[in-house]
Length: 410
Image (cartoon, rainbow, N blue to C red; front, top):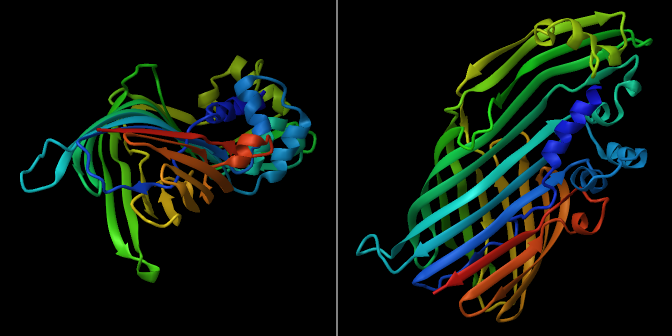
Protein backbone atom coordinates (compact mmCIF):
# COMPACT_ATOMS: atom_id res chain seq x y z
CA UNK A 1 0.00 0.00 0.00
CA UNK A 2 0.95 3.63 -0.31
CA UNK A 3 2.03 3.89 3.35
CA UNK A 4 4.80 1.35 2.58
CA UNK A 5 6.23 3.66 -0.07
CA UNK A 6 5.93 6.75 2.12
CA UNK A 7 7.59 5.14 5.15
CA UNK A 8 10.45 4.13 2.84
CA UNK A 9 10.93 7.81 1.96
CA UNK A 10 10.95 8.72 5.67
CA UNK A 11 13.48 5.93 6.32
CA UNK A 12 15.79 7.23 3.57
CA UNK A 13 15.80 10.74 5.04
CA UNK A 14 16.30 9.52 8.62
CA UNK A 15 18.79 6.66 8.00
CA UNK A 16 21.88 8.50 9.24
CA UNK A 17 20.63 9.03 12.78
CA UNK A 18 24.05 8.58 14.38
CA UNK A 19 26.23 11.43 13.17
CA UNK A 20 28.61 14.25 13.98
CA UNK A 21 27.64 17.86 14.43
CA UNK A 22 29.51 21.18 14.30
CA UNK A 23 27.55 23.63 16.43
CA UNK A 24 30.18 23.72 19.16
CA UNK A 25 31.71 27.11 20.01
CA UNK A 26 34.22 28.04 17.32
CA UNK A 27 37.46 29.31 18.84
CA UNK A 28 39.90 32.06 17.95
CA UNK A 29 43.66 31.39 18.14
CA UNK A 30 46.27 34.01 17.23
CA UNK A 31 49.32 31.76 17.79
CA UNK A 32 51.38 31.46 14.62
CA UNK A 33 52.37 27.96 13.49
CA UNK A 34 54.45 26.57 10.64
CA UNK A 35 51.96 23.85 9.73
CA UNK A 36 48.48 22.89 10.92
CA UNK A 37 46.31 19.83 10.21
CA UNK A 38 42.62 19.79 11.16
CA UNK A 39 40.18 16.89 10.94
CA UNK A 40 36.46 17.69 11.38
CA UNK A 41 33.61 15.24 11.63
CA UNK A 42 30.34 17.13 11.30
CA UNK A 43 26.67 16.38 10.87
CA UNK A 44 23.30 16.24 12.49
CA UNK A 45 20.10 14.28 12.35
CA UNK A 46 17.08 16.10 13.75
CA UNK A 47 13.33 16.29 13.38
CA UNK A 48 10.62 18.59 14.62
CA UNK A 49 8.15 15.81 15.36
CA UNK A 50 9.57 12.30 14.87
CA UNK A 51 10.96 10.76 18.06
CA UNK A 52 14.13 8.68 18.26
CA UNK A 53 12.09 5.59 19.13
CA UNK A 54 10.91 5.44 15.52
CA UNK A 55 14.25 6.45 14.02
CA UNK A 56 16.14 3.72 15.86
CA UNK A 57 13.84 1.07 14.39
CA UNK A 58 14.69 2.16 10.84
CA UNK A 59 18.42 2.01 11.62
CA UNK A 60 18.68 -1.04 13.90
CA UNK A 61 15.49 -2.89 12.95
CA UNK A 62 12.46 -3.77 15.01
CA UNK A 63 8.74 -3.13 15.18
CA UNK A 64 7.26 0.36 15.25
CA UNK A 65 4.25 -0.05 17.51
CA UNK A 66 1.17 2.19 17.78
CA UNK A 67 2.46 3.86 20.96
CA UNK A 68 5.58 5.09 19.11
CA UNK A 69 3.52 6.30 16.16
CA UNK A 70 1.05 8.12 18.41
CA UNK A 71 3.80 9.82 20.48
CA UNK A 72 5.40 11.28 17.36
CA UNK A 73 2.05 12.11 15.75
CA UNK A 74 1.09 14.23 18.76
CA UNK A 75 4.30 16.27 18.38
CA UNK A 76 3.55 17.19 14.78
CA UNK A 77 2.28 20.63 13.83
CA UNK A 78 0.97 22.00 10.57
CA UNK A 79 4.52 22.31 9.16
CA UNK A 80 7.23 19.80 10.10
CA UNK A 81 10.87 19.15 9.23
CA UNK A 82 13.25 16.22 9.24
CA UNK A 83 16.78 16.14 7.89
CA UNK A 84 20.44 15.16 8.00
CA UNK A 85 23.58 17.26 7.69
CA UNK A 86 26.66 15.02 7.49
CA UNK A 87 30.26 15.74 6.54
CA UNK A 88 33.89 14.92 7.11
CA UNK A 89 36.76 17.13 6.06
CA UNK A 90 40.55 17.33 6.23
CA UNK A 91 42.36 20.69 6.21
CA UNK A 92 46.09 21.33 5.81
CA UNK A 93 47.58 24.80 6.38
CA UNK A 94 51.12 25.80 5.45
CA UNK A 95 52.07 29.10 7.10
CA UNK A 96 55.78 28.72 6.45
CA UNK A 97 55.50 29.25 2.71
CA UNK A 98 54.26 32.79 2.07
CA UNK A 99 52.25 33.47 -1.07
CA UNK A 100 53.12 37.18 -1.01
CA UNK A 101 56.32 38.55 0.50
CA UNK A 102 54.68 41.51 2.24
CA UNK A 103 51.66 39.59 3.55
CA UNK A 104 51.36 37.15 6.42
CA UNK A 105 49.31 34.73 4.33
CA UNK A 106 49.88 31.02 4.10
CA UNK A 107 48.34 28.31 1.95
CA UNK A 108 45.36 26.09 2.76
CA UNK A 109 44.45 22.82 1.07
CA UNK A 110 41.26 20.98 1.95
CA UNK A 111 39.05 18.10 0.96
CA UNK A 112 35.82 16.68 2.26
CA UNK A 113 32.61 14.73 1.87
CA UNK A 114 29.15 16.22 2.52
CA UNK A 115 25.53 15.12 2.54
CA UNK A 116 22.73 17.58 3.20
CA UNK A 117 19.08 16.62 2.89
CA UNK A 118 15.69 16.82 4.46
CA UNK A 119 11.97 17.21 4.02
CA UNK A 120 9.32 19.79 4.79
CA UNK A 121 5.96 18.06 5.21
CA UNK A 122 2.49 18.23 6.74
CA UNK A 123 1.00 16.27 9.62
CA UNK A 124 -1.30 14.47 7.19
CA UNK A 125 1.69 13.13 5.23
CA UNK A 126 3.09 11.58 8.42
CA UNK A 127 -0.36 10.11 9.16
CA UNK A 128 -0.66 8.60 5.68
CA UNK A 129 2.88 7.18 5.85
CA UNK A 130 2.53 5.48 9.25
CA UNK A 131 -1.22 4.81 9.60
CA UNK A 132 -2.39 4.44 6.02
CA UNK A 133 -5.59 5.93 4.65
CA UNK A 134 -7.99 4.39 7.20
CA UNK A 135 -8.04 7.48 9.40
CA UNK A 136 -8.90 9.77 6.47
CA UNK A 137 -12.14 8.20 5.20
CA UNK A 138 -14.66 10.97 4.40
CA UNK A 139 -11.83 13.44 4.82
CA UNK A 140 -9.09 15.20 2.84
CA UNK A 141 -5.39 14.56 3.31
CA UNK A 142 -3.65 17.91 2.78
CA UNK A 143 0.03 17.51 1.94
CA UNK A 144 0.48 20.72 -0.05
CA UNK A 145 3.74 22.58 0.38
CA UNK A 146 5.81 19.45 0.95
CA UNK A 147 9.43 19.64 -0.20
CA UNK A 148 12.26 17.14 -0.37
CA UNK A 149 15.94 17.83 -1.09
CA UNK A 150 19.05 15.67 -0.84
CA UNK A 151 22.55 16.37 -2.23
CA UNK A 152 25.76 14.38 -1.67
CA UNK A 153 29.05 15.82 -2.90
CA UNK A 154 32.81 15.87 -2.40
CA UNK A 155 35.16 18.81 -2.72
CA UNK A 156 38.81 19.78 -2.97
CA UNK A 157 39.91 23.34 -2.42
CA UNK A 158 42.87 25.71 -2.31
CA UNK A 159 43.22 29.20 -0.93
CA UNK A 160 44.85 31.70 1.39
CA UNK A 161 44.82 31.80 5.19
CA UNK A 162 46.09 34.51 7.54
CA UNK A 163 48.74 33.13 9.90
CA UNK A 164 47.54 35.09 12.94
CA UNK A 165 43.75 35.39 12.80
CA UNK A 166 43.23 32.20 10.70
CA UNK A 167 40.87 34.10 8.40
CA UNK A 168 40.74 32.36 5.02
CA UNK A 169 39.38 32.45 1.47
CA UNK A 170 39.19 29.11 -0.36
CA UNK A 171 38.10 28.22 -3.91
CA UNK A 172 36.57 24.76 -4.32
CA UNK A 173 35.70 22.31 -7.07
CA UNK A 174 32.94 19.79 -6.33
CA UNK A 175 31.95 16.35 -7.50
CA UNK A 176 28.19 15.79 -7.20
CA UNK A 177 27.47 12.12 -6.54
CA UNK A 178 23.74 12.24 -5.79
CA UNK A 179 20.85 14.70 -6.01
CA UNK A 180 17.11 14.40 -5.42
CA UNK A 181 14.66 17.30 -5.40
CA UNK A 182 10.88 17.39 -5.02
CA UNK A 183 8.40 20.25 -4.75
CA UNK A 184 4.70 19.54 -4.15
CA UNK A 185 2.97 22.90 -4.44
CA UNK A 186 -0.44 21.20 -4.22
CA UNK A 187 -1.05 17.65 -3.04
CA UNK A 188 -4.45 16.61 -1.70
CA UNK A 189 -6.24 13.24 -1.53
CA UNK A 190 -9.95 13.17 -0.65
CA UNK A 191 -11.94 9.99 0.06
CA UNK A 192 -15.68 9.48 0.19
CA UNK A 193 -17.42 8.11 3.29
CA UNK A 194 -17.58 4.58 1.85
CA UNK A 195 -13.99 4.76 0.58
CA UNK A 196 -15.13 4.02 -2.98
CA UNK A 197 -14.37 7.44 -4.45
CA UNK A 198 -10.95 9.10 -4.49
CA UNK A 199 -10.07 12.62 -5.67
CA UNK A 200 -6.42 13.48 -6.20
CA UNK A 201 -5.07 17.02 -6.73
CA UNK A 202 -1.38 17.36 -7.67
CA UNK A 203 0.83 20.22 -8.79
CA UNK A 204 4.62 20.01 -8.60
CA UNK A 205 7.72 18.28 -9.86
CA UNK A 206 10.34 15.72 -8.87
CA UNK A 207 13.93 15.41 -10.11
CA UNK A 208 16.16 12.40 -9.50
CA UNK A 209 19.15 10.61 -10.96
CA UNK A 210 18.92 7.70 -13.39
CA UNK A 211 22.09 5.78 -12.49
CA UNK A 212 24.46 5.02 -9.63
CA UNK A 213 27.60 6.63 -11.04
CA UNK A 214 29.90 8.21 -8.47
CA UNK A 215 30.33 11.35 -10.57
CA UNK A 216 27.00 12.73 -11.78
CA UNK A 217 27.72 16.45 -11.63
CA UNK A 218 30.33 19.13 -11.13
CA UNK A 219 30.30 22.33 -9.14
CA UNK A 220 32.32 25.41 -8.27
CA UNK A 221 32.16 27.48 -5.10
CA UNK A 222 34.05 29.04 -2.24
CA UNK A 223 34.51 29.12 1.54
CA UNK A 224 35.15 32.32 3.49
CA UNK A 225 36.09 32.58 7.17
CA UNK A 226 36.58 36.20 8.25
CA UNK A 227 37.41 36.99 11.89
CA UNK A 228 37.15 40.46 13.34
CA UNK A 229 38.03 41.91 16.76
CA UNK A 230 35.44 44.35 18.12
CA UNK A 231 35.02 46.27 21.37
CA UNK A 232 32.92 44.46 23.98
CA UNK A 233 31.56 45.45 27.39
CA UNK A 234 33.85 46.37 30.34
CA UNK A 235 36.73 47.14 27.97
CA UNK A 236 36.86 43.56 26.75
CA UNK A 237 37.37 42.58 23.13
CA UNK A 238 35.18 40.09 21.29
CA UNK A 239 36.04 37.90 18.30
CA UNK A 240 33.28 37.94 15.68
CA UNK A 241 33.27 35.36 12.89
CA UNK A 242 31.63 35.78 9.48
CA UNK A 243 31.62 32.42 7.72
CA UNK A 244 30.33 31.21 4.37
CA UNK A 245 30.76 27.57 3.43
CA UNK A 246 30.12 25.71 0.17
CA UNK A 247 28.61 28.75 -1.53
CA UNK A 248 28.34 28.02 -5.23
CA UNK A 249 26.51 26.18 -8.00
CA UNK A 250 26.39 22.64 -9.34
CA UNK A 251 25.64 21.23 -12.79
CA UNK A 252 24.42 17.67 -13.40
CA UNK A 253 26.30 16.39 -16.47
CA UNK A 254 24.51 13.04 -16.04
CA UNK A 255 20.90 13.74 -17.00
CA UNK A 256 18.20 13.53 -14.35
CA UNK A 257 14.60 12.51 -14.84
CA UNK A 258 12.14 15.34 -14.13
CA UNK A 259 8.56 14.32 -13.42
CA UNK A 260 6.10 17.21 -13.72
CA UNK A 261 2.43 17.06 -12.76
CA UNK A 262 -0.48 19.48 -12.68
CA UNK A 263 -3.65 17.45 -12.60
CA UNK A 264 -6.92 16.63 -10.88
CA UNK A 265 -7.74 12.92 -10.90
CA UNK A 266 -10.92 11.08 -9.86
CA UNK A 267 -11.36 7.35 -9.47
CA UNK A 268 -14.68 5.68 -8.52
CA UNK A 269 -15.83 2.18 -7.81
CA UNK A 270 -12.72 0.93 -6.01
CA UNK A 271 -11.30 1.32 -2.54
CA UNK A 272 -8.09 3.21 -1.92
CA UNK A 273 -6.06 0.01 -1.40
CA UNK A 274 -7.26 -1.34 -4.74
CA UNK A 275 -6.02 1.70 -6.63
CA UNK A 276 -2.49 1.96 -5.19
CA UNK A 277 -0.69 -1.11 -3.86
CA UNK A 278 1.23 -4.24 -4.75
CA UNK A 279 -1.65 -5.55 -6.88
CA UNK A 280 -3.06 -2.15 -7.78
CA UNK A 281 -5.57 -1.79 -10.59
CA UNK A 282 -3.64 1.17 -11.97
CA UNK A 283 -0.40 -0.78 -12.02
CA UNK A 284 -1.99 -3.84 -13.62
CA UNK A 285 -4.21 -2.38 -16.31
CA UNK A 286 -2.98 1.05 -17.43
CA UNK A 287 0.04 3.29 -17.44
CA UNK A 288 -0.03 4.96 -14.03
CA UNK A 289 2.00 8.03 -14.99
CA UNK A 290 -0.12 8.80 -18.06
CA UNK A 291 -3.33 8.27 -16.10
CA UNK A 292 -2.28 10.68 -13.37
CA UNK A 293 -1.09 13.28 -15.88
CA UNK A 294 2.58 12.93 -14.92
CA UNK A 295 5.04 13.81 -17.69
CA UNK A 296 8.78 13.12 -17.64
CA UNK A 297 11.75 14.60 -19.48
CA UNK A 298 15.52 14.31 -19.17
CA UNK A 299 17.19 17.46 -17.81
CA UNK A 300 20.67 18.66 -16.83
CA UNK A 301 19.81 21.12 -14.06
CA UNK A 302 21.95 23.89 -12.64
CA UNK A 303 21.30 24.35 -8.92
CA UNK A 304 22.61 26.13 -5.84
CA UNK A 305 24.84 24.05 -3.60
CA UNK A 306 23.57 23.51 -0.02
CA UNK A 307 25.99 25.99 1.51
CA UNK A 308 25.39 28.15 4.55
CA UNK A 309 26.12 31.55 6.07
CA UNK A 310 26.98 31.93 9.76
CA UNK A 311 27.69 34.91 11.97
CA UNK A 312 28.64 34.52 15.61
CA UNK A 313 30.79 35.40 18.58
CA UNK A 314 33.76 33.07 19.08
CA UNK A 315 35.63 31.80 22.11
CA UNK A 316 39.01 33.55 22.46
CA UNK A 317 41.67 30.98 23.40
CA UNK A 318 44.05 33.81 24.29
CA UNK A 319 41.68 35.38 26.80
CA UNK A 320 42.51 35.49 30.52
CA UNK A 321 38.87 35.04 31.49
CA UNK A 322 37.74 31.58 32.54
CA UNK A 323 34.08 32.17 31.57
CA UNK A 324 33.11 33.32 28.06
CA UNK A 325 29.89 33.45 26.08
CA UNK A 326 29.29 32.48 22.48
CA UNK A 327 26.28 32.84 20.20
CA UNK A 328 25.35 33.06 16.55
CA UNK A 329 22.98 32.23 13.73
CA UNK A 330 23.34 29.89 10.75
CA UNK A 331 21.23 30.10 7.59
CA UNK A 332 20.90 27.73 4.64
CA UNK A 333 19.19 29.00 1.46
CA UNK A 334 16.54 26.29 1.73
CA UNK A 335 12.95 26.11 2.99
CA UNK A 336 13.59 22.73 4.58
CA UNK A 337 16.09 24.31 7.03
CA UNK A 338 14.86 27.17 9.20
CA UNK A 339 17.35 29.76 10.60
CA UNK A 340 19.42 28.12 13.36
CA UNK A 341 20.11 30.21 16.45
CA UNK A 342 22.55 29.03 19.13
CA UNK A 343 24.10 30.43 22.33
CA UNK A 344 26.11 29.10 25.24
CA UNK A 345 28.86 29.50 27.79
CA UNK A 346 32.43 28.18 27.79
CA UNK A 347 34.30 27.52 31.05
CA UNK A 348 38.08 27.02 31.26
CA UNK A 349 38.91 25.45 34.64
CA UNK A 350 42.43 24.47 33.52
CA UNK A 351 44.83 25.72 30.86
CA UNK A 352 44.34 22.55 28.87
CA UNK A 353 40.58 22.05 29.39
CA UNK A 354 37.47 23.84 28.09
CA UNK A 355 33.93 22.66 28.84
CA UNK A 356 30.72 24.25 27.67
CA UNK A 357 26.95 24.09 27.41
CA UNK A 358 24.67 25.46 24.71
CA UNK A 359 21.05 25.89 23.70
CA UNK A 360 19.85 26.10 20.12
CA UNK A 361 16.64 26.48 18.16
CA UNK A 362 15.79 25.95 14.50
CA UNK A 363 17.34 23.99 11.68
CA UNK A 364 15.41 20.76 11.25
CA UNK A 365 14.13 20.77 14.85
CA UNK A 366 13.06 22.92 17.77
CA UNK A 367 14.76 23.66 21.10
CA UNK A 368 17.85 21.58 21.93
CA UNK A 369 20.56 21.58 24.59
CA UNK A 370 24.18 20.55 24.14
CA UNK A 371 27.41 19.82 26.01
CA UNK A 372 31.03 19.68 24.85
CA UNK A 373 34.62 19.41 26.04
CA UNK A 374 37.90 20.49 24.43
CA UNK A 375 41.36 19.26 25.42
CA UNK A 376 44.41 21.35 24.45
CA UNK A 377 48.01 20.14 24.66
CA UNK A 378 51.25 21.47 23.22
CA UNK A 379 50.74 20.39 19.61
CA UNK A 380 47.50 18.49 19.77
CA UNK A 381 43.86 19.46 20.42
CA UNK A 382 40.72 17.39 20.56
CA UNK A 383 37.06 18.35 20.93
CA UNK A 384 34.02 16.13 21.46
CA UNK A 385 30.40 16.89 22.31
CA UNK A 386 26.76 16.94 21.28
CA UNK A 387 24.22 19.61 20.39
CA UNK A 388 21.33 17.36 21.40
CA UNK A 389 21.95 15.84 24.82
CA UNK A 390 18.34 14.66 25.22
CA UNK A 391 18.57 12.87 21.87
CA UNK A 392 21.66 10.99 23.05
CA UNK A 393 20.11 9.69 26.28
CA UNK A 394 16.39 9.37 25.49
CA UNK A 395 14.18 7.78 22.85
CA UNK A 396 11.81 10.69 23.42
CA UNK A 397 14.34 13.04 21.87
CA UNK A 398 14.00 14.33 18.33
CA UNK A 399 17.34 13.54 16.72
CA UNK A 400 20.93 12.84 17.66
CA UNK A 401 24.25 14.60 17.19
CA UNK A 402 27.86 13.92 18.08
CA UNK A 403 30.87 15.86 16.90
CA UNK A 404 34.62 15.36 16.91
CA UNK A 405 37.47 17.71 16.02
CA UNK A 406 41.18 16.88 15.96
CA UNK A 407 43.97 19.40 15.38
CA UNK A 408 47.73 18.96 15.11
CA UNK A 409 50.20 21.84 14.85
CA UNK A 410 53.93 22.04 14.17
